[in-house]
Length: 102
Image 1 (cartoon, rainbow, N blue to C red):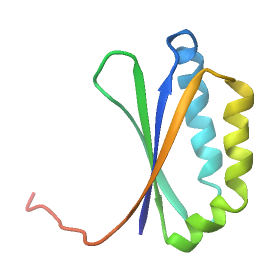
Image 2: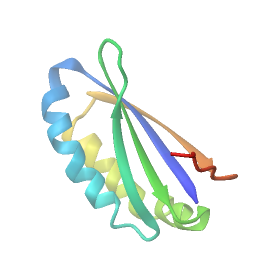
Image 3: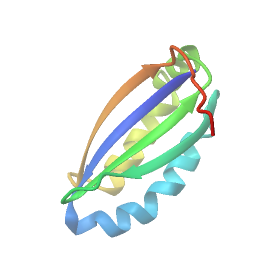
């Protein structure tokens, strides 16, 4: 399994409309092959800092997304919110899952 992390910094002037748009955008990304689910988190600090985590079945599925559907999805955000947010991305490869006792 792969965890695909996208960190977003959103301008205060467009934060409300951006956050209304984001869940639908995430739903469209989840249509890509191998994408399992996603979570949206907000950092507890000044300004709007949001992280989206996608669980993807395999690195191959993520590469397939990068080589195809990702361009369309990234362009959607850039067209709707030009110069109103910054994004950085990370890929985490699962080494081991450890369950808690609860």
